[in-house]
Image 1 (cartoon, helix red, strand yellow):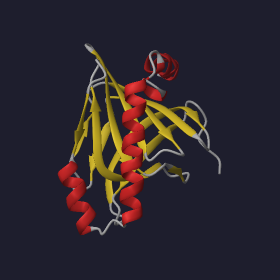
Image 2 (cartoon, one colour):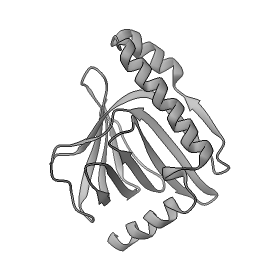
Image 3 (cartoon, helix red, strand yellow):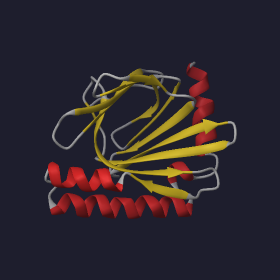
Image 4 (cartoon, helix red, strand yellow):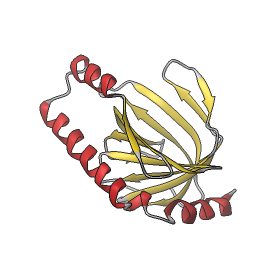
Length: 175
């Protein structure tokens, strides 16, 4: 499988467990792409929801996807610091159309002081019933949620000091 080269512009698509398209982000610049990790950047890009509604992101962001982790991390660069939005979902795939993953509802919002809140537990519970998530999937999601919280607390991976700044500098080279 070939991956887009640094500087390539791609779309990101998230789906739901039932295969329906959930959300699309356009014009995301690849900063690093391989079979194990994708790091990308974007700024004020168009996002399209499954119902056709569209909106633009408000700030530059660095996106982190790991092929072995059931979550991805969006580091948002704001005037008062870095905020992170973490989506629990499948590892990514790249199929020459877009970077794709299945979104499993649970999210974590991390603040500049590295405190965090878990979001959308009710949505996860509802979709788990409606879409009949198997017990094995629930186990994987909970295990990865715990791993994500551990990474936040230990400031590892995309939460490591300097990570967002380093990749944002790289992103600016392609703008």
